[in-house]
Image 1 (cartoon, rainbow, N blue to C red):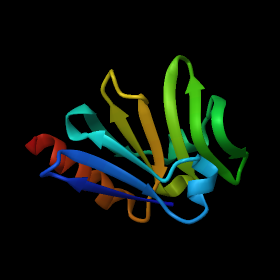
Image 2: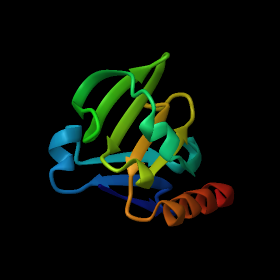
Image 3: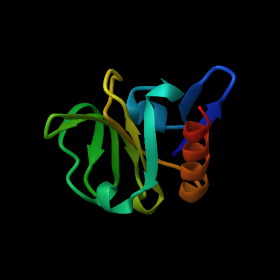
Length: 121
């Protein structure tokens, strides 16, 4: 699971990976400028669908999808074990990834936080 936070002063969305997720994703954190965040949705359906081609990371179908993936030309970053808790963050062109698919503790609150921050910036 990951913790998503927003630092309005620095204008950053930060995703911090917890525990073994650091190992599975090969990352400890991602920092994305808020100006590059298009929006966020709670989307268990995407997390249950095709993941794409794994570039780096871990994938055990039905258990965990973590790391960098490519699907239909899109660059995706995954960290999901429970699809019901998946949040999809859409990013603007120029970022390393087109979408982040991240499992969080409270998907609805995380989406509300991100949406509120990008409408204010």
